[in-house]
Image 1 (cartoon, helix red, strand yellow):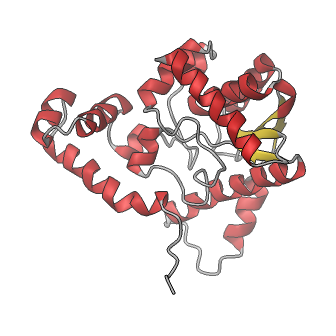
Image 2: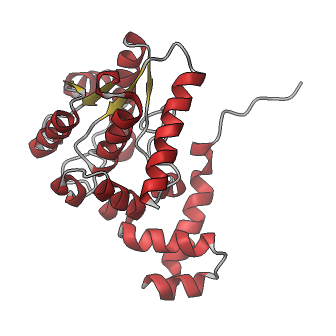
Length: 255
């Protein structure tokens, strides 16, 4: 599976650049995490190291310095170009200019950050005649666990067909740094934030739920197989329905 997936993903990247001429390369938000490291590796394989730029965008007091170091090590191993852009001033500037900004409004405030990062990635994409290659996986897409017009605002998603557990397998096949594969997944939205804490479930169990739904199994059977409550299965069925708007293009009236 992993070898076929690697070939399919690199073909997608090459084809996207060909379709979107005069695009000449790829820009990847390189956080030092699993997904972005896999995407950067696939881009390097598809396009060559000189045509890939990894951009790490930390926030003071939120981003773990180890993640920045991991992103730097991944870029060094791949030999791709690399930039670090501190998003702290931009995020603070936006918050300070929102007259009704509230410290307690955690999610709206946090979603500013991926949108700032998206803006930076597209700056470099415009500058370098490149495409922004997204890092969302299928688990995140089905759960709607990404920011609309933030980390969801990209030109292509080579991992969009793979669940998180499959991305880990692909990472091992691609010889991604072991400590990166073992990192606790985090969107870097606030200090101490982790994906699984926010979702309320591990990716292993979530992927088992989605695998059961893919097979058309009943929620009670899925719950037994995944070792979760039936309420958890129903919660993610409902969540997928509620978050479907994130995967849709804007509605256009028919005249």
